[in-house]
Length: 162
Image (tube, helix red, strand yellow):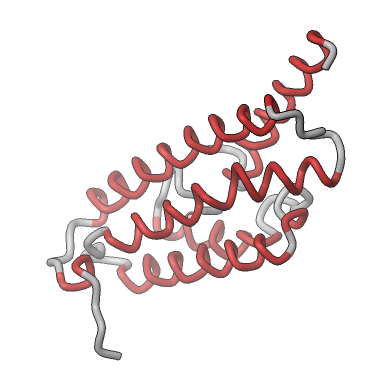
């Protein structure tokens, strides 16, 4: 995927569409999860499963962004962008993070995969604190900048930047 900031790309694409529609119409030490206990899977299989989860997240974000636009949020304003991020970006990213955590770890690059999950969770927390940091981030920077770099190293094709 060419744009590295996946959530930003999806949400701004929808925001642009919603803007056009508005103009035309006038108006995510002992306890261990099941995934951690599971046997490791080959890296290509892990990437395929993770990218499928991220693809579903992209689609959910798009649907939620359309809904936010239809609810009347002014996506051209800071307040509207904040609503967009809070309602259409963060909840799907939180769900994505949970689903990725539940995957069996990859047989190789398992440490990097865990580091990616940690950086995604960190990006979510940072975005919750400062929602406008997501749409204002340059590629490879912002709340998910660290996750983007790790995603490239792991080999994700869709999971870039959360």
